[in-house]
Image 1 (cartoon, rainbow, N blue to C red):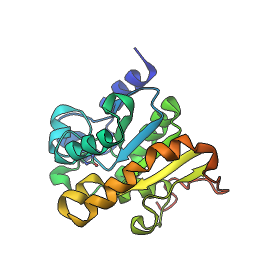
Image 2: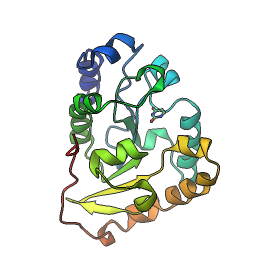
Image 3: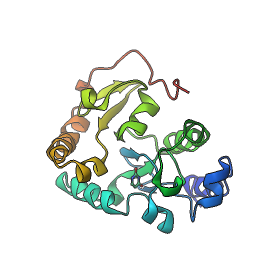
Length: 199
Ligand code: URA
């Protein structure tokens, strides 16, 4: 069993958040290539993800598949996960304590996959790495810290609710291949991403 598969097993037994552990059908650790260059990080599982134990399998996931296809990629080429590994009941926003409890799993996943690029999808994922920054200002702008590229994007579900964002998300996605290819040209920043310093 791979180290990532072992981690999934451990995550499936997690009871750090009482309510989430009680109400979930399955944990949704993540899926995709274990040596992916790009990791996409969303917010939290919804209804369908909770049923299937897989990330982004609902409507937002279909749009994410479409976005990936526009740059010639499929799910097997990347890794997709969420900040939170259990569905918040009724799809409510994740609580700060839940985000904090779940942080260890995301850290371990990134340590195992060692991606070149992290794409944050939506504001919860963005604030894991860049708390206090506004997605409307920094989406589509790559930053390099400790030799890893961070690339904030709007959440795919945002395009489903707000048609005007669709083109923005599509345009941001189309920039990914050239950012990865010109890795050396993305200027390195000094500060580390401040994971969860807001909590
Ligand atoms: N939205 C997310 O943020 N993650 C999923 O897995 C599905 C929908």
